[in-house]
Length: 482
Image (cartoon, rainbow, N blue to C red; front, side, top):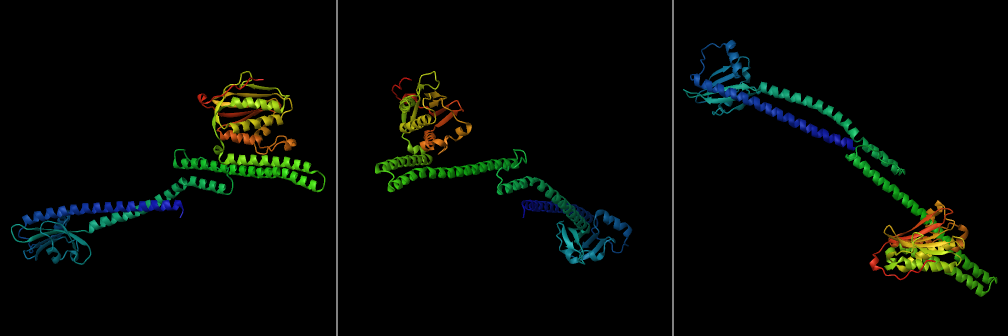
């Protein structure tokens, strides 16, 4: 059954039970009230008769129904009987409007308690019930019995029950219809949620549950929670798709990079077999390609280790980035003596400032070496390079700034991708893993490598790390800027 049908069935069952209980309580209360009133009348009448008519009715007196019937009806006692000490009926007064065949039997009258307690007696012909009260008479042995039929009480209760049944049925049908409509409107937001879920199941992850109710309501909370979950699912699927795309590109690039040195090695051996080269020439080319293959393999292994457990690849200790910056200046001078190289603070007009960090010096040197090599490889010979070091916004920063051609926004967005080369014509010069390794090492330290560039305005790569306590770092003279 649907939720709507189950809720309606439960509500209808509870309503039916409530109406039945109310009807039963009202009927019992009304019946008890009428019986109590009738018992009070019967007791009062027997008390009066037992004292004022000790001799019993005069059987010789002619009956006068025109006087007797209204009198008995007025006091609500259509039947009055006198019993002697042996329980024999010695006299009666009865209304002519009541069929004598329905009066209680003599045997049932003898069973009545004599303390004025009311009891229900069956009619002689079995059609109906009587309410009777017995009390001892005064002045002579015997008992006075007053009885009244319960036909009117039973008819009133039956009518009440019939009215309750009819009105309850009408009310139940009406409320069931209203409940069906109200539940339909109340569950309409859930149907919207269902249709949204169906659309998502068909692959449309951009679907969202519309604002179906106020945010503080249950439906509002549900819609907000579902939208949050759907956003996370969409992002997760997008991330997975992007990861799969990157993995396919990575595998393709790895295959290409591995194939290049292997082809060189195989070509050298084939050329040697054909007599096209000497042993020394062939071995030299094989050695160069093997060295390149080894470097590529080591780079890939390092990236895999940094991805899996970055902190496990580090041996941190207190240090100052000025030491690495000064060594980087000498490395640049050795690689290209024609370049103008300056060592400054983060502002070109300031001297180098202290940049204390807790880091693995060898790994951080590898980062700076990659940045220096990138500047040399991708800028024309003689291009000025500035090495800045200092503290900015609570972070220790070492930056390599060049006056080279710079990069476009697309190139800058992909420059840290593995195997990416902005200049494909220089594919043989590097594997395209240097900047990716630099960023991975920096992030393993809790920092990052950032880039500021614009086409025609040079590039600035910055190593940004968390600043350490200055008191824990001891450094020597970083050297003077040149």
